[in-house]
Length: 461
Image (cartoon, rainbow, N blue to C red; front, side, top):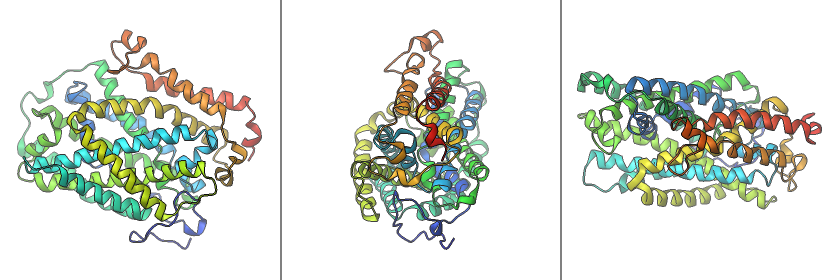
């Protein structure tokens, strides 16, 4: 290894494999990149859904958030070892399951996911300004979050890791201060623990939301571990990512449930500002900077996915830093438009967006993990990922595509959303178990049909 982390250096490589002489960092970097990037306003708002949308009591909300994050983080963290082993972005590696053209089905959906998260983050950045200075436009908040995210995404991997490491300490301290201020300085009302009530549908809905928060990071993971040395190890990469993302998400979500239980306003951010009166301005600014970190990560990954999409259609193209810069600016413009158009009904749109992601990401993560750990045991021909004909993986792996579509279809009877009420979910009183069904059917189905197809020769790599 000759490389070291250099945050001020422009990253030259994009979707190309990372050579051994460019590898650097340790598993500890995976903890901070996931812990620091989750300490933000959007995570707090997501935790607040447990009491504001799902109607749980605070104790029930905490239980559901713990279960959802700890369960979902397993699937997210299992992807962490793929980066050091293969040295390519997550969606490039997906060509090994779906084929070069078949992978575009998933890549396109993931780009949409990144744009949704970026728009949500920009909305929250704007709310910071209006919460600190009522009556002001939210444009300065949008600009702050947007500009910082674009700069980090353009400079790339090392700057994002350094920024998340800094936010682990700064935002971590702000989070602790917020808890202390609300509980001991502001004080909790006597009926706090008796507000709302337990419901099975609310519990499972909150578990699903928290689990999805973790699963939604699965397409990100290898993008932030692909520069690590191959000897990092599966266990070290898994546990660093697992606890970084689980704790980094769970703690602000619990704060969100606390704030949501005390909220009398439409905006959780405004409630947080009121509950932390006296320190609200610096506190919210810190959390807004956390939003900028997450936006940088989403924008960086969205750029890699967009370049992956383009390179699939033009195999001879090898995009560099300039291509990433141009794509990042275009994607930011789209996410900003989404934020401005959707901010008036943000909470409802965001909840529906999370549920949509749940249904389409679960089958992909099941196929990817089964293929990597149970079928190929981490052995892939990386050169084939970049061949015009897909190399040994071909253009379309029909088994993966059909199993992916099957994974979405089997969830339909169990879905309970404003757009679709599945018959099984209706009989269960509105309990949505679709993601569980998607996991337990898609993974075994793909394993079975992949073994029966023409893939055994490929598995011998």
